[in-house]
Length: 164
Length: 343
Ligand SMILES: Nc1nc2c(ncn2[C@@H]2O[C@H](COP(=O)(O)OP(=O)(O)O)[C@@H](O)[C@H]2O)c(=O)[nH]1
Ligand SMILES: [Mg+2]
Image (cartoon, rainbow over all chains, first blue to last red; front, side, top):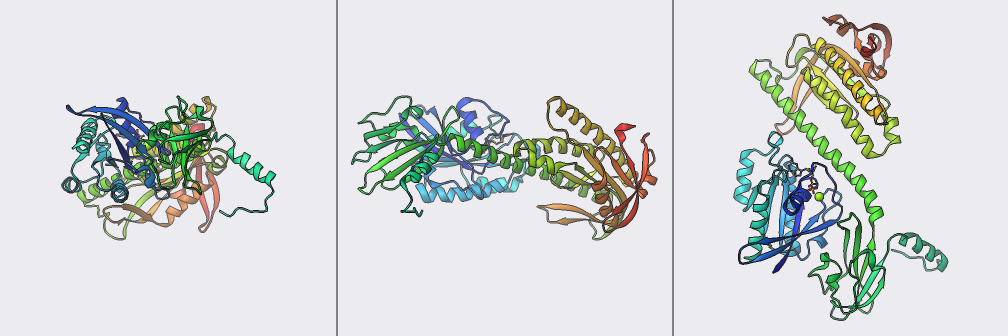
């Protein structure tokens, strides 16, 4: 069995903790609880010939006065970068974190989640911006930790990219 | 960090005890390979189900250390959360001889306290964002409908009759100082939600939110009867606030009142800003007057300026009393005061 460390990275409140909870425990809560340092969860993914033990590092959210320390990224084999589709500024945070991740661990596989896609009436990304993102970033998912949309798919895709 | 060399040992000891209190340190020393445990100290019961033994791999101390050893540099991971909501720090330190030590400390107490603050700040940020988005959308709709009926709201310096309403939670500063951030935040949101809902129901445009209150403009969407709309929304607001108060009383929580000031007149209105952040603004003498009246309105009271009072089509059976108010920067004005729920 292969074990891989994956970092969940993004601004605070975008849904990193919720995506892990959905994926690992199949549950969702509207209650918001700040992640302080890091919480590690595991889930085994069966890719047919290979099984991958995903070790998910749910790291605290990047903030102006509290940047995500590179120590948490050390040893990561993959990353899930998360933005909130109702807060376009969280996409800029993704860029910043991606650069820091590359500086720390080099070019590792990653996927982009534009999360909270269930909140259609609060969605703040115009179609043009999403198209542009889709072209620049592959793979990218419009996800929802609430409904489960694209959650399993994205984690499986990331697992597949890591064992390639 | 400068350490005072002449500090007496018993004081150093005292400081150390004070800071180590509750931290429950546990440590291991690693062999020259930088991977294998050769010495164990402290209380590992707090960190591991199976106590570490000499000869074990350092990474078996905790899953977060998987694949991390050997380490050539000092390293630190803070606030690692356990399944039962405790937090610990891991420090990897090399001594003068180059030997590698791994230290665990329990930081649950301080982290939980910090978490509460963080939580309040982040929730406030998210809530703030959500409210603003709502207001932005509202402005957008306003602009659209105005363009459609040729209202010319866009034109710079357009003059029109509007009615402005200020509302505010009374004694909020006192409450704020006596309660913790989370409690304050929940309370403000509970009140603001019913306050804003009441004015939006009557097509009031929320111009700005001022922490514990708001400025609302009537007469943009429908020009006729804007004073009546403002007044009716104030009545609805008072009723809903009373419901909140009732609820809070039952739960043994602090009860706060709301004061409202309303004034009307001609104002210059316009949309300022870019497509990203549009804001509507109204300037005019009566806008300041409405703010002054609100600041003089006791909890449960609605204060109207004379123009608004005389313009009302229906006073909805409210008892009014005339007050003469010294309004800062304006002078003495006539104001009509009513306590709608005491009718
Ligand atoms: N509607 C909706 N809410 C979400 C979604 N994901 C997270 N949330 C909510 O957003 C808030 C922050 O989520 P959290 O997972 O703690 O974000 P984190 O700070 O990135 O870990 C919580 O109140 C969640 O319930 C989603 O996909 N849809
Ligand atoms: Mg989190």
